[in-house]
Image 1 (cartoon, one colour):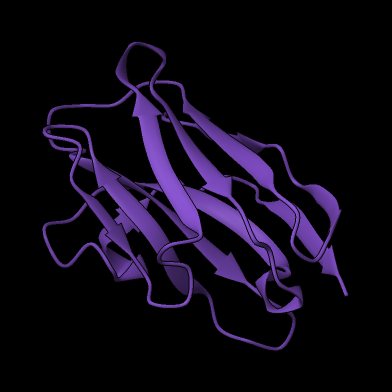
Image 2: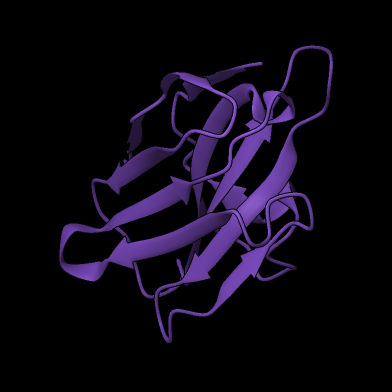
Length: 124
């Protein structure tokens, strides 16, 4: 059973930075990408960023492009999300997940093995 574990969340002031980490217990050849999603209270889960293990191609939502950077350490099966210039609207529970389907990288339905989530709170 593949498990993903996030860490690194916390409370930060607007304009500050945080780095999230997500480590998977294992992955297979078919799990080509890993992604971060977030969910704010009363809102649906939304895509934040994704990265492919093969080639390191990255994908970002428009709301975080230029402020967040996704990267990975293949040997550790760990993905990072460096978040800078944080805004109060970035406040959410952040989840990582491993690709399990063959659809678009932007859809949560293409992912499984979700982590338990880590809270990010940005104060104004």
